[in-house]
Length: 296
Ligand code: GDP
Image 1 (cartoon, rainbow, N blue to C red):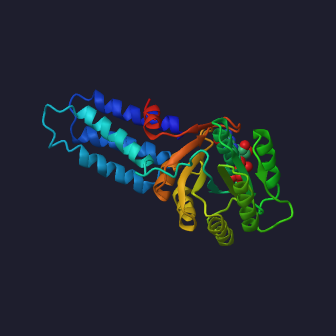
Image 2: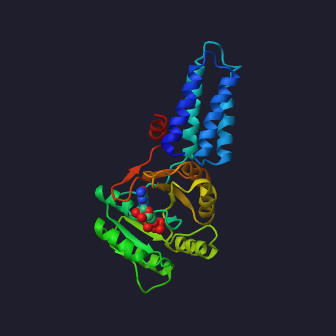
């Protein structure tokens, strides 16, 4: 089920509940069952769905609600709030300051859209008058440096990398140093994509992080990852201090529910979403407008 359908299904479940003459336990349970089914079909992690149901039941205690209360409204509000809570870890991420050097490191699975997202992120700030720079510390994937170079050139953003050097830690440190000397205010380090199983690559990522001491580590996740999202995101969080999430390919037919799981696993907010292959297809993510839009 894609995200738009998820929103539609939840809205329909709430509508059905609203149409009932009397809202009793059965009507509420039917509504919550529908919502649960929609969330699970969208690949939201089972535990999150279960917790959401428990929380709503706690808030909407039909016996305690006096006759005068607008039960429909209370239930709708509770569902809205719980969806927001799933996407809001309760703390904001590090926010770079214009004119002051920040180092931001990108991590994620290969193919997640990490390299593309690094450039989009640089471009977003460059348009606002920042001076970003890109460092390619991906020595694992052949062609990674060329890709970054191409993207960076298109975005007119300075970049650093090497065809010869095979040590990503060395490249990352050199790149960060160079751009610090040049007073760039947003130094973006792209790392190689890796899988949960690849212990050596995770260790390399940890070393890059230790050597460059980033102000922020961004975990990039493809919205189509599905039920594997929670475990993958958690594996990254365990190796490096992930502080924010960017979800890519929100324009596709992905289920998207994995994004809710990634927030839960990393306890970090989603800060941007990718909505296409092009540089400008990149949006700031805000929880409440997103959920409002989801529920139409
Ligand atoms: P990396 O291996 O994680 O660095 O992934 P890449 O940046 O090379 O991206 C993998 C593919 O996903 C490329 O074909 C990108 O153009 C595409 N891609 C990245 N972000 C998005 C997005 O938001 N929407 C769509 N439709 N495609 C994207």
